[in-house]
Amino acid sequence: MIAATILAELSTLSASGQQVQTKMPVDPNELKPIELSPLDAPTEKKSGPLPTPLSPAKRIRYALVGLGHLTLEELLPAFASCKYSKVTALVSGDAAKAAKVAGQYGIDPKNIYNYQNYDNIRNNPEIDAVYIVLPNSMHAEFTIRAAKAGKHVLCEKPMANSSKEAREMIDACKAAGKKLMIAYRIQYEPHNRLAKKWTREKKYGTVKIIEAVNTQNIGDPAQWRLNKKLAGGGALPDIGIYCLNTIRFLLGEEPVEVQGSVYSSPGDPRFKEVEEAVLWQMKFPSGVQANCTTSYGVHQARRYRCYADQGGWFGLDPAFAYERLQMEVSQAQDKMEVKQSPSLTEENQFALEIDHFSDCIMQNKQPYTPGEEGLQDHLIIEAIYESARAGRPVKLEKATRLDATRGPEPKES
Ligand code: NDP
Image (cartoon, helix red, strand yellow):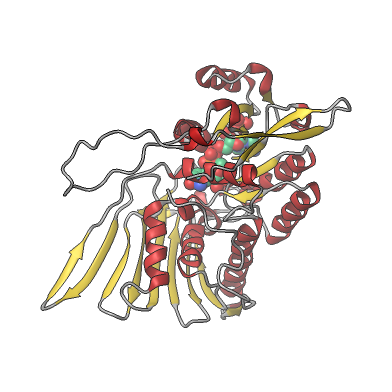
């Protein structure tokens, strides 16, 4: 739960037109959950405390940039589950769609921008942060423009089209004194966080091998995801990144060697510019080996398993879906192999991720998944492509410590 001492940041315009921050204390009573007497017997699973949302006037205010599938299907509905965040502005190339969405979600039409007048968000004190949900090639430009306009940036994965762009985004946000977080929702999702805890605490012994798969059968060949200039690459930066990023998150380590191979079905009109499939292996300094598969050309599968050396393995299937994630455990017990499917109370992972960023803005903390976390994925993706081109393993720089590219842990929900 958010600390009782936090101060909500309120943006106002000074006489000179410059954005200034004023602080308003949050009443600790507002953060205390209401207590209701339990309905079930004491032997039943305990329910968590009731949510303690901040009053709307004290929440961090977001402009959503790009009104496509993710924004309309997941993010706008997810804000209803947010406790510290709300949407106050929209940025879109389609004025009619933006007006309709503004009406649906009670957003003031004066807070609608397009890609040309986007820089004018600088003058809008009703926007604290932007959430970039555009094709990958546009992430760098719209992050840098937001930072220059004095706004914090939450940016979708993959962070950019290259490590060079990722560095430029980090530098621009640093220069502007604004926070940058990459939207790795899995790192805030409770089942994946439990798998990370089991990995780090060696619940079933030392994890020595991890296998991860993220595949889907992509449709329309004309979509931006299959255009190299807009997407940067194919299955690897779009969905393979979940295997890569989640394994790094589970271990806290960085790979020191990768080896990959890239394949596209000859003649398939979907894969003229970007790859269909990538299979790759990663070696970690502790000796863990990971085997990963991603493809745009087969039926969907979104899972991983961590194989440990003291009588058990565990994982999630599905692991990377938006909802209904399922843990699996297989464990030796006496003369039996016991398989279990433990589950936690489901929470909206987008809301957890967005509220973490808002919490970081309110408390002036570094996000758990800052720009450096996105940059590291790009460096590894580039090494996997290089390995596939050269037909040999590629070495990577050794990290100096665990979780070297992450900020302080998010609050457990
Ligand atoms: P969509 O194609 O559905 O939406 C992208 C939106 O960007 C469009 O609707 C459009 O909005 C705007 N846009 C601006 N210029 C272009 C252009 N040249 N071509 C196409 N769209 C353009 O993509 P998604 O919503 O699926 O993905 C957006 C981002 O979110 C990507 O970076 C993707 O990797 C990421 N993503 C992350 C997921 C996650 O789970 N974290 C899941 C899905 C996607 P408008 O009409 O308003 O201008």
